[in-house]
Length: 520
Ligand SMILES: [Zn+2]
Image 1 (cartoon, rainbow, N blue to C red):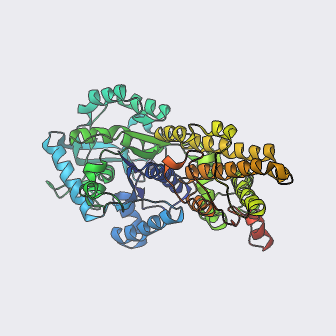
Image 2 (cartoon, protein in one colour):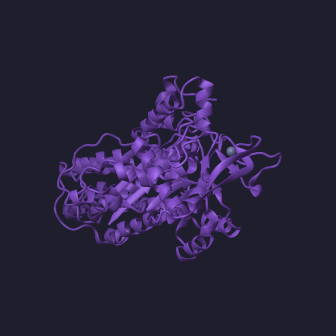
Image 3 (tube, rainbow, N blue to C red):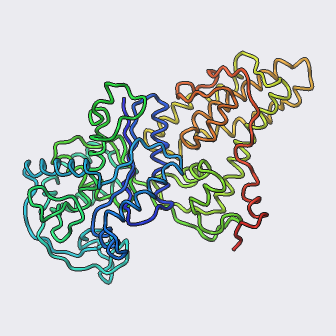
C-alpha cells in the first residue's frame, strides 16, 4: 500500500495567506494519517513559477522573473514548517529536472498525435493566464474571478486535442463516481465535459517565461500544462522519504504513481478534473485516484474576537495560540469541501471550549488525579467495559472517513469520544472514590480507563494537532503513534508525568492586558 497526496502548487505572484495554509494543512492531515497506518506515504507541495503574471509583476518591480520567483518561493517554503506541514518535497516549476520532464511528457503527447499547430483567438485574462470560454465571461467583458476587463488576443499556438478525449472522459466519470469529490464538483466537471470539449492552446508564442517547447523554441508551454505536470515530475527527482525501504526508494514513480489524492480549490477545477486526466491519457500515464475540491473560507469580520481583531490572520493565530490551534480550527469549523465562514470569534470560542476545556483540561485533570491518588502510577488491568463499547471501531471509522477525504467528519468522530471521556469523569467522580478505601479497585479502574481513553483519542488526533498530541502522549509515557495501537486497552500505560497546560486559556487575554491586543 502507498499513499500520495498533493496540494496545488501555489502561484508565486502572491503572498501566502489563509487559503494556502488551509489546503496544505488538510493534505498534511491525510499524509500523517496514512503514515500512522504504516503505508509508504509521499506528500508534495510547491510553487508554480512560470507564466505571464509572474513576468509582468517582475517587470513592474524591475527584477527578472527568476529573481521574483526565487524571492517568493522562499516565503511559501517557509509556510510549511510554520503550519507544521510534513511535506516530503517542495517542488518549484523552475527546477531544471521538472522542466526536462515537462518537455519529455509533452513530446510524447505530440508523438501520440494529440498536438497540432493553429491560431488561437479569444478573450484572455492575464491574471488567470487563461483564455475564457464565451459562457464564463462576466458582464462588461470581465473575468469572473478577477473582475478585470479581458483582452482580445490572437496568437499562433500549438493545440492540445482535448476534443479527442470527450468519450473517454465521459466513460471515466461514469465508471469512477468518486474521481472528483464532493459530488457537487463532480457534477460541475461532468457537465463541463458534456457541454462539448474544444481543443485548447498548449503553448504561448508571445511569452518567454516558461518551459521552451522542444520542437519549436519560439514557444513556451502554456503555464497550466507545465504546472499540472509537477505532480508527475516531482517523483522523478525528489529524494525518497526517510525510512522508506530500499526497494520502494529506488523509483518513486513506481512506488507512488498514480496520486491517491489531489487537493485543489474550486477555482482550478476544470484544469484538474478535465484537462489533467485527458493529458495523462494522451501521455499513456495512469490517472489519479481522487481529487478533493475544497471550498473557500469566507471571512466573517462581524464576529470579532478581542485578541485577534476582525481578520483571521493565520500568522497572528500561530504566534499567539500555536499552529495546532489553527489546524484544529480550520478543519473543525468548516466541513472540507464546502464553502464556510470563519471568524476570529468562532476561533476563540473553539479554542476555549474545545481545545482548552474539553481536551486540555481533561488531560491535566486526569494526570493530576493519577499523581495525587496514585503517585503517578497506573495499576495494570482491564479498561472499563462501559467505555470499551463506546470506543469500539473508532479508529476504523476514522480511517474510513479519511479515505473519503471527510476530514471534518473524522475529527468529529474523535471529538465525540473526547466528550464521552469528560462525561465519564463526571459519572465516576474519582474524587469521591478516593475518599472510600473499600473502592480502591474502582478508582484504579477509572484512572486506568481515563488515561487509556485519552491516549487513544490523542493518537487519532495526532494528524490534526501533532505537537500537542506528542506532548500529551509523552506525559502518558506512551509515545507510540501507530494507528494499530489506537484501540482502547492496548496502551499499557504504567507511569504518567506532570503536564503543563496544552492549550493555556489566558493566551488571548494575557496579550490584551499587556496592551498588545487590538480592540477595534
Ligand atoms: Zn482572471
